[in-house]
Image (cartoon, rainbow, N blue to C red; front, side, top):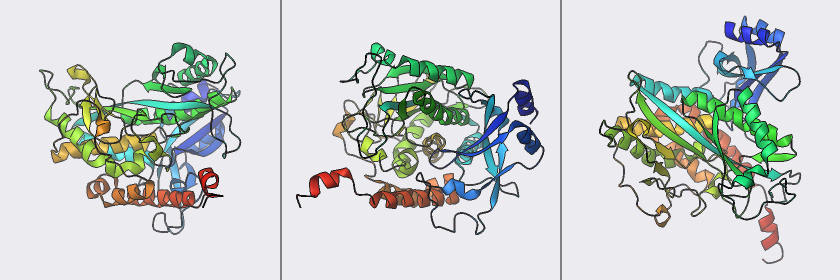
Length: 447
């Protein structure tokens, strides 16, 4: 804890935001004066009710007493000192730190997203493996939308006009919103968020940010903090940044592509390639695990009812888990690479997913393939859109398949599976109670 104390005193921090990512990837926690935070470090720590991890995206608490204790007992926030950093958009010197959560007896909260990712990483560690990931996160800039009944529209750029047409990789199109991106880069630099390339994607005012590859927990932390950062930078210019999977009709959806590989923990050698450059059996088994289990853990990579609107053909999104070499129509793409950078790109996960859970799910699927010695299908040549749709069509079906998959249950934990199911089922039921504008438009006077 000495590092955090030194950071706070050296930088004259006045307040500390103690953050915990919940099931939806929303930042929960407490804000405390720096002096109180330092006192807490020497004591047991800040407390929260364990029910925050089973809070829905709409703020409801599902009525399921089997998940949390009968008392909804307190859990203790344990700051991860490696994650302390500035919050650069406040006038007063403010720090933020990510927390793990434990019960009074020291046991971790099984349905904490950060713990679930750590659980998967420990399985790799037991085998002498170390996974490496590199997320690519897409998002849209849209005009401020105060009435949810109105569709989202792109913001007005520097030229005074709303972007029209497709501007994929357009340099001038990106520069239309340069002040926002300058703020994003400045905020990220101040927070040690290691973003790399920024490009304009296919949608109107759709942007992709690439992260440099590294440790999965560290990258999940960065992706979690980046979402908050992008929204804050956009708001300062009277624009929304949204990570909805499919925010606008007729536009592509937003993904969080996850590049992943596995190295030998002792030697650092990439286990996905043989010395002669050929694909290793472990690599093929990893792909096979993604093929076998990714459709079963869609509640973690496509967690919302809106997520399934993205998974349609010809909109830069996959409809199956076929794999191919440098093939962007497949769910699993193997980029052209040298042996030391051999990897597979999971293109299924949406930008709306909790980064801890989508990375945990993706790595868990690959892990199961490796330990079970699974074999993949033949790589697809040509368009994978001509092949069958392989995912659940909606959240209810996804939850049923998620619960029925014994290997995933064993890998991720019964308590976690139960918590995800309870939260997402409650959200799905809330969605089904809403009458949409499409129904009013097409059914009101016609049926």
